[in-house]
Image (tube, rainbow, N blue to C red; front, side, top):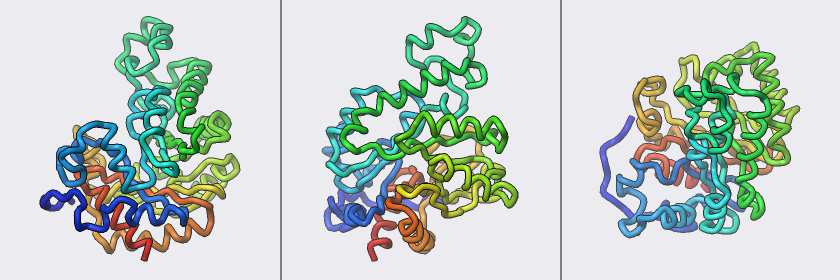
Amino acid sequence: MPKPDRAHSDGAGDPRFAPGGPAWSLRDHQLLVGVTAWTEPTLVKSGLFYPQDVTSAEDRLRYYAAHFPITEVDATYYAPPARNVAAAWAGRTPEQFVFDLKAYRLLTEHPTPPGSLWRDLRDELPEDLAAKRNLYTKDLPDDFYDEAMHRFLDALDPLRQVGKLGVILFQFPQWFVPSRHAFARLEQIASAVAPDRAAVEFRQHLWMDDRHARRTLEFLGEHGLVYVSVDEPQGFTSSIPPVVAATTDDVAVVRFHGRNAETWNKKGVTAAERFAYDYSTDELREWAPKLEELREETRTVHALMNNCYRDFGVRNGAQLAALLRE
């Protein structure tokens, strides 16, 4: 749960927040520790990470990238990215910086407001679909989905060209259950995204229960899809156990959602409130050997803190990096 506020620090005197500090020191060891949503409003407003003179989006990304070698872009879930924005991200970060990106919600079968679509595709919709509050993939023809995937991937080319494109995260909703349709969708994604890496995160416990877990991991491995290991509240239909697994030989991904069971399925809360959890040192230490295990099984490990309330993520990310460096 959230802890009391601390006094603001811009990093002076705190080695965890020194540019090129513990997170960057792990970069050469292929352990990439970072935070999702570097512009999350509660982080910016808290004054606990960004100095007062770091006020623009450009300056925040430069400042963040001085402290962490990787981030995950969450905004691409809500609306498709533009090539010029991807080019700006590439230009504002160090040479070895990596961007993982969350796939557009239409591509992961989440409800999608028509207004978030590309304008020309939106204009092609039949009137009855254009008038809906949300669209679902099942409402659309296959070629519409294929075109949306193509445009999403094409917009990432500025990152791809300079070697800063990490994985593309496909986070599926709770109603995406093991089925013929689901396996076909995963296979379609693997084919479309290759040679880039698609990473898959489930929010339905059936994928990793005793009956399905082995088949799930085998299928992902057979199709070059990265299994996303998670740390999150347990005991819900949407809960995935903290299974550590590498399904490709080049990258593994772990996302830390916090353990705030009170808000995990709560309606009407923001993402920051849902993931508001301040990990203890002991809780982070539990993951150090697991991350080392993953690194032995694959070339690179991405560890992303998604407990994005105020400075919890950046502070816990720095703590985790320090533990791994030890």
